[in-house]
Length: 200
Image: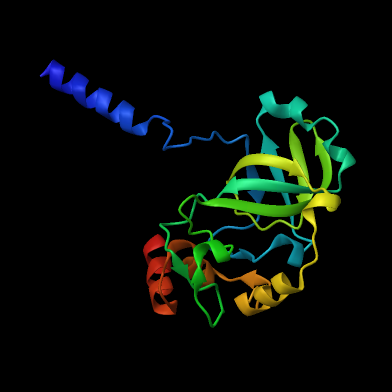
């Protein structure tokens, strides 16, 4: 019996450990914001620049913030930790078209990694105060990088046209029902109402 338990423990360790086919990340900190799945959230933070939030960095990474206040805008990479499942083909909220997931910013991705451009207001010890936030409270932060205008901005008419076709400008804010469709995978409004009822 002991041998079986040992074997099972080894198997669990093997299948849950990081391998060349499984990349593991540890959050460097967490987001504090007013947004949850129940409140909804901005579609992109830069569309609602007055929204405020914080990133509380783990103390051991505090020195890694040195000189970051020289930058006004920063990139935040994070995990869409509340997304459920993924699909190759998705329909963005209020869009009339379906797209391959890699042609969208959908949170329901094979690797649910998010990317947000935010305004850095200040840093106090290990806390970053930011504006233009679109992340839910409790979101695990994976990395922080400075926004570099010389390399991070390229004007492309083709991309602009594709973005309009994608429907990114249809709505600045995703309400709770759209959040349930887009993040939890409800197929329609009726499904989202059922999900909402289940959560309460």
